[in-house]
Image 1: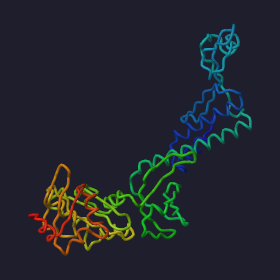
Image 2: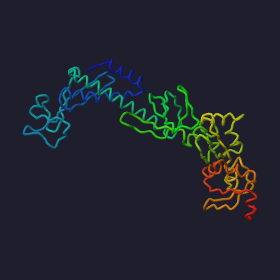
Image 3: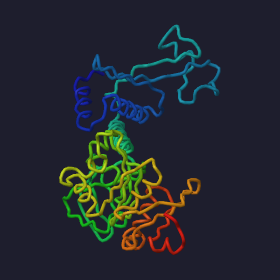
Length: 358
């Protein structure tokens, strides 16, 4: 069958659905096989699509077997034909050969044509689902921008693009998040799974990697690797502590992250609905690293360092003890998580009373 219109439509469908012509052609061939089965009662056929000649060819296939009986060990997908009958079509054919007869697709029954359309549409939907799945699978563990399209007591409904929506459970949002319908927000893709109905994308705003991705997205020096995030700890919605280091002596790691007039860090805080972000300078010197991690508290001394157990004691001024510990122990807790050291803190007077020399 020759059909220029068919091949023109292939290009149109490919463009509209964002699917390659080869995948659409493959889906069409599968549909033709189903239509053939509906008309002939078996699937022993070969479909050939030839874009250069605008041809669609369908061949019914038969395995040639001896006249004495059918070959029970032969390929069960091939319909068998006795040698004497096969030679009525092709004189020199022999047992074991495949006899192909041309079938005009226009002869398919109306029911077969309907089946062809249904199978083709279903195959195209499956391809689209797979394409969307692969697109978002590449974005797993990354930050994306989503649009809020609905809200109820438990969820925000988000449009992720690619005609895919997902739910952001409010338990996975920050306590300070208050989004309006139509607002664009930044979320972290925790996982992407393929379900029966299509791809399922799970998102969150609680993961500390969201902060890392914001730094990479909004700070060119972090994205390029000139400035590295060496340690990070987070109380989502309240405070994050980030240790940064510069790989270029001419670049100030803290300054690069803060930006001119605090523009960069302010943008990150805004994306996190007001969550505070503390920066400290990473160091290969253990004492400096431990002292820096406890900022904004000023540390007088770092002592009793055990590099094996990664334990240490930090001494601070008496009036800075509560600042070093933080409300509810938050500052020291985040410092411990960010640098992976266990830190005990004492005031200067406490250390002197215990005979600790610093």
